[in-house]
Amino acid sequence: MAGGISSKRNLILQALLGIVILVLLFWQVGWQDFLDALVNIELSLFILALVFYTIDNLVLAFRYNYVLKYMGIQVPFAQVFLCHLGGMLYSDVTPGRVGYFTVPYFLKKRANVAYSSSLSAIIGLQSLEFFIKVFGCGIGLIYIGFNIENQILFVILLIGTIFLLIVAVILGVIVWSEKAEGVVQWLCKIPLIGKILAKLLPKFSDFQQQGQKIKPVIPHAIVLTSVSWLLKGLQWYLIALSLNITDISYFGFVMIHPLLTALSFVPITPAGLGLQESGIVIIFTLVFGQEAASSSAFSILARFYAILVDLAGILVFI
Image (cartoon, rainbow, N blue to C red):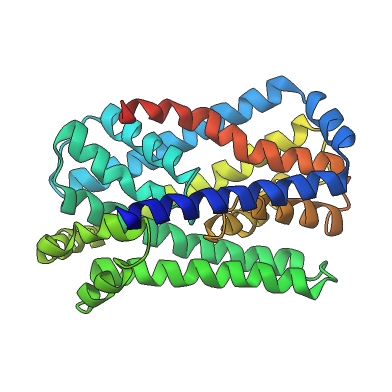
């Protein structure tokens, strides 16, 4: 009971910290300039970004469903898609975006899918996704590194990349390493994700056996994850165009998307609230020479356009 109250208190404090960072950011930019940029959005392009975000989610849900079928688990795609959106919605409000690991819980609740099997699939896929994100972050650092005069900013982005790499390695160890049980016992002490992983311990051997089934489909998962990366770059490109930001190419957004969204995985605020927005504004203004007002408007839309689509996942909580 005390632990639950403490976790809720920490989450509230983290949310307040994120809000404070946002308020300071927009105060520095200028509230009126920020609002002017936001209200002048080209709505058709923003809606198109929502469409491609939906397609992106369909790709990721298909990836998960494909892996489950390869493991011998037959689940209607509609259920997988809805549970995926539920996990995405929860990840939008949890530090480190760990809320996405509730997808197996939703599948157990709605489709009676064995928890250990679906969790091994989700952890294996997230490990691959994080490794690809780290690869993308490396390319992004090279892409913008020559234009960053502020070494502190470069170090912050590098730390975000290293953090993702650590998470990717830990997830990979959990699924495929023989010493994984010790790692899981250690991770069970961490708030939020610990409660999820604690359910693994009684059936850990079964969990790892299920995880071994994923290996043959890793190439397919990598292809689908790469498609998702390209779609995310397109979504950001469309949002930028809707705000009349035309100096950053589609290729540029593909390069910087993993780097800037890495900040959303830093577990200081819910889904990196305030951190990701600050990183976007700094990179857009210092590296690409964009106005602070349009950059800050982009940073807000880049977060909340996803939440608009993810809200459909609230159905799994009912």
